[in-house]
Image (cartoon, rainbow, N blue to C red; front, side):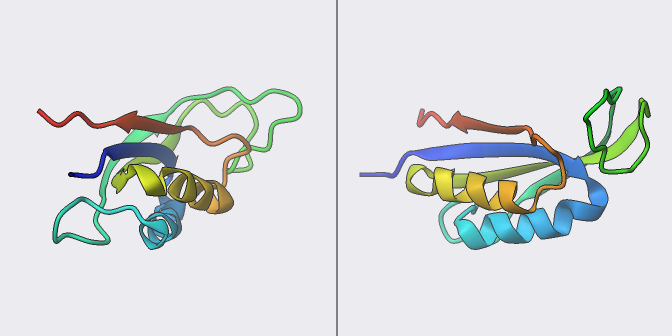
Length: 106
């Protein structure tokens, strides 16, 4: 029986993407089949306004634009928690956004 797969997505400043990617793939993120240590990254601009108590990664309070990278990984259901914990352990954000989605086999 084929193992259930999940997509994991996170966003982070591009300077942190290599470390996040390394931790995710070492924790079990992969594409599938014979491919290992694979991911996709797409650049973009994140927007935010920091409030009291925030610790913005770029050190600038009330900055509204920030260059970020969207990183996507696929992993088996048995590795989701380990991969998410690995990403959280190196992610620079106070409360990183990490989405997980089950993939359907059609």
